[in-house]
Length: 450
Image (cartoon, rainbow, N blue to C red):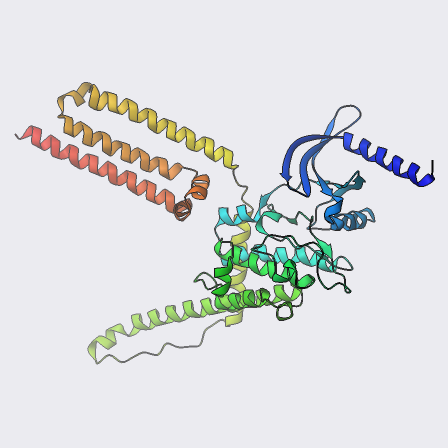
């Protein structure tokens, strides 16, 4: 048998042994070209390590080359802050098999949903995201182009940000005119990724611009949003201009690198904070001037008062201080460990079950078979009292509900999450309680003075 065939057979048997070392816990994703599993390594003594992620990528799809480059770089001793550690990478039959660490944390979509979109959140997350992509572009030669940057492929924990899913990532080739494989998530993928020229680092710049929009408004940027120039009251004008340039149709009109995009974004946030601080400062000075001069103005004809423009602190210093405060706010919020959604669902189910049981008992003892003092009251009063008490209990229950899952089904609920929802629930409960007290008092007066 030729030595080449012997080598191929040995490699095939070796790959089979590697596959048998892992126990499949669950299938995370399955598509036409790729299967992703959550697996555990099983030792000779039966002990398990993990979990890990194992990917089977079909060889004829032309995908997965970035995993080989990352694996080789890490095997040479290089360490990356924002890239998962690849444990093994080998060929098995007609597939490339990649085993890597299982990255724990929340996706960017979950973080923005939990924290609500805002400029402070974008300042914290987007800068770290730029650093992660810079690591891909500048840490490899030629640079690795991810080509599928989207909220679901960015994992955050309290102290880290990791980019995952390098299935369609590729290296930049100077002699290529266009990509041979055209995949990606349409909302975040640049135009050139669908055929008319080769993708390069500016293609990831485009996706980052779209992700910046998501951090600020929690919406997927569709064609209408792009046509409207990302116009939104929550986006400062200076930041919007950065997004417009990052997502330009022609790659030559975009920022030349992610590092340039990050620097432009930071400069834009300084301008936005400075404008906000200036407006707040001017408003405060106008109010102070009116307070001081109102008595004198009342005695004479009112004259317009020009507010002073000098401040005790330079606008730049104010901006730096304010920006640092925003960063601290975002960091504190992101470092709060989120309660798993299933725990919130279980909590909500308990609250609903309690309300239903109280409602059934209340109907029986107050309306159907009134007992005690309720038996001496007219039926209409018992109904009013029962309804009032149930509204009060529903108000308290609404304040205590975990509204994350409900908000996903009914987006309007997102605006009454957190402290606002607690206030609404408590106010409703107290108003209902007051109504019951008022009705009871009127009933008491009527019965005592017929």
